[in-house]
Image 1: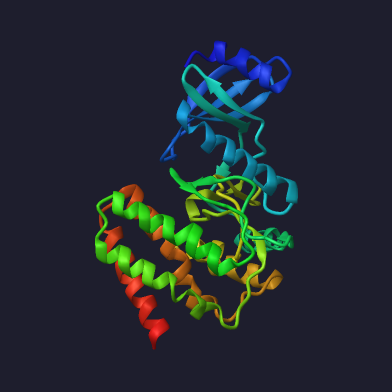
Image 2: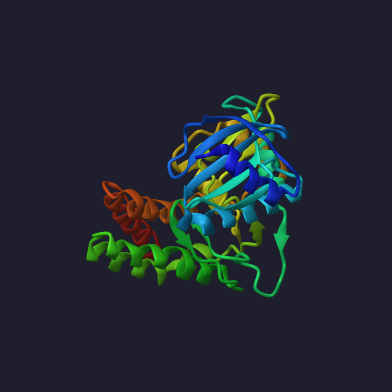
Length: 295
C-alpha cells in the first residue's frame, strides 16, 4: 500500500486534508488486513481487503453507525469506506483495547442496546443484506420471527452446505427442523431488538479505562437471545456479564432451551466457512433439537 497516495484518497472522503505519518500492522483478524495509522488527525484503524469485499465493508459501517448512535454499548464510529488500487477499505478511530474490564457493565450495556426495539409492521430484518464472516446474510424485512429465522438464517446455511460437501442427511434433518420451529416459541414472542449479530468473545473487549467495547458487527433487528446464545458458544464472558445483563433486561425462562437452536446458525456457518468437524456438530445439534420437539 502506498500510504501517501492513499492519504489523498482518504482526504477526499473525509473532506479535510490528512497526512499519514506511519502505518503498523495490527494482528487478530481472520478476514481482513488491518493497520494502525498515525496521522495528522490522530491515530486511525483501517481494514483492507480485495475490492470485491467492498459490500462487506459498507455493511459493517452501517451496523457500526447504528450501534454508535444508540449511546449504549461503545463501538468504533466509521469515518469512511471506499476503494483504492483494487482494494476496499474501512477507516475508523484507533482504540487501544485490553481483555480486562467491567464485565457486569458490558452485560448492562448490551441489555440497553437490546432495548432499542423496532416496532414497525415488519420489524425483523435490516436495511440491507450484510455478512456473517464472509457469508452473505439475508435481512429482508419480516413480521414473523420464526419464519425469519427459518427462512433467512437456517435455510440459506443448509443450502450452502450442499455446495460445501455437506451430507444429504445434514440437509434433510435441517429442513425437518425448520418445520418444527414453532415448538420453541409456543409461550414466547420475541421483540425486534437491535443486535450485534456476531457477538463471540473475539468481537468484544474493553478500553483501557475498563469500559466495554464491541466491533465487527453483523447487525439486524431480531430476538436478543441470539446475541446471548453466541456469547456462550465459545465462552469468554464471565458470570458478571450475565448478571449485569439480567439486572437491566431479564431473559425469558425458556432461553436455555432456545440457546442451542440459535447457535446452530453459527455452527452451520462455521462448517460452510471452515469445514471439518462442524458438520458433525451441526448434525448432532439438529438431531438433539428434533428429539426435543418430538418428545
